[in-house]
Length: 209
Ligand SMILES: N[C@@H](CCC(=O)N[C@@H](CS)C(=O)NCC(=O)O)C(=O)O
Image 1 (cartoon, helix red, strand yellow):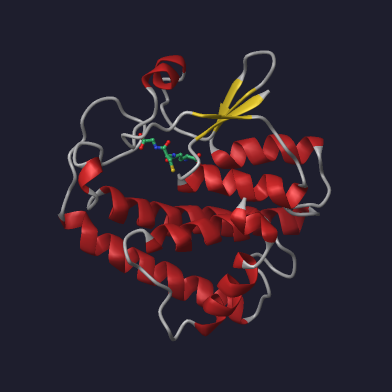
Image 2 (cartoon, rainbow, N blue to C red; image 1 turned 120 degrees about the vertical axis):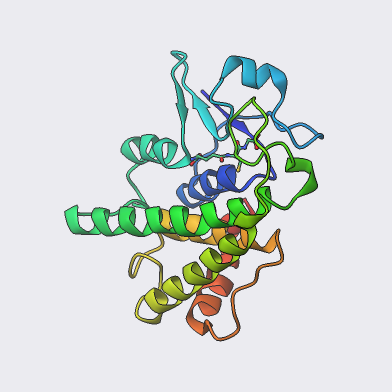
């Protein structure tokens, strides 16, 4: 098996953090080019045209960072990073989805609608040109602010995003906060709980994976 990777990209980072927390090492193939595009040979092989992607030895291609984490979680349940019992699993999934939809997608909307290299690539995963929409930029900033404040409130009563244990919800939240920095977004100074959490999870070895 191997993982198709783009070492600078935020969604593959979700998976790298997960694997590091698990202590798993999986062979990688870099498919990001210096032109900030996925290599044409990869897009030809995998027309979904996004990373990360896990290819199994039988040829099955599994995309979506959380689907790949789920695959490894079933095979290597310890330490549990996707919940323990029914309630905990549901809470981890809820917060991971919020981190992705309200954080990652907001940071992506901001970045892709401002960076000159993405002028014709307003959305990932398409070979067809999709123009940037300048009107989305302010909305994306407002989405990020809402994301910071929602997670700050959650972290006022919890050590980690989904409770007392580090989970995939923390990995996705960290990637979303750090992706926001690509567009000069920072955690607001009054979001003290989110800042406390960010310092703590950034100090874990997995944050550098
Ligand atoms: N929902 C996907 C999102 C994957 C995604 O957006 N990946 C980006 C990199 S962070 C990508 O492949 N972009 C390709 C491009 O920009 O051409 C997941 O969870 O894995």
